[in-house]
Length: 282
Ligand code: PLP
Image 1 (cartoon, rainbow, N blue to C red):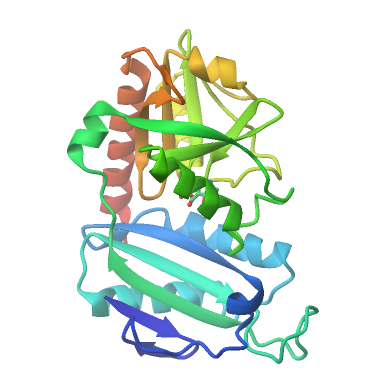
Image 2 (spheres, rainbow, N blue to C red):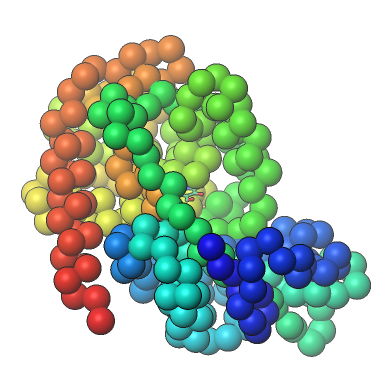
């Protein structure tokens, strides 16, 4: 493991965050998680673009140009010697005596952590995972990948306590996304996922899966679906950088049908995409 803070490479457990860091005091910042397969980052460009968008949405300047942040992340990755890694990038509005409004002049702070990837165990991948549903109590700008994850933390904890993998946020009976994933259903051969509104995170894996489905000629609609539609789905799966595509076996106490036809096709196509991007990596 290795880390970077502000302007230098450090050990992950080196104490470097000043007590008046705004990420620490307000959650005033944004982050990205990028998966590295055999030393090569996947969808790095998309993550860098989303990082710039999230920063723009909270009117925060990046401490370095995005290209330089990418270079520092790749340098950290190289130094870490980890082949199956996760790159965590966090940018906050920096260090200032505590006040709510933005510090002047702006001095945002960059952290990078490289660590071993969390890999979904094969038995879970085969069996599928259980999920619970929870009321979506989050703010209205969930498309910002902000550090404010308290509702996500609370929901995930409830999932863990229920022996489930994930908690899905439901708003007025509409299934939106997981606490750290997007969610898809398949019904009568049609794949559905919540549209990319301001109310959900625009997952990079979600986008890859949508593109993959289009390329494979699998019908897909970015449309809202209800809790009942989820219960009655032929198939359902989660997507995220760390889970990739992960089949859902049970929702609350409803066992879903055992069909995996479309999910398996999409999973295979996703693996091909990874390989293809790998072979094009500079
Ligand atoms: N939705 C939420 C709330 C998330 O936190 C995440 C990722 O952590 C995702 C969806 C999946 O996004 P991605 O595929 O970019 O990892």
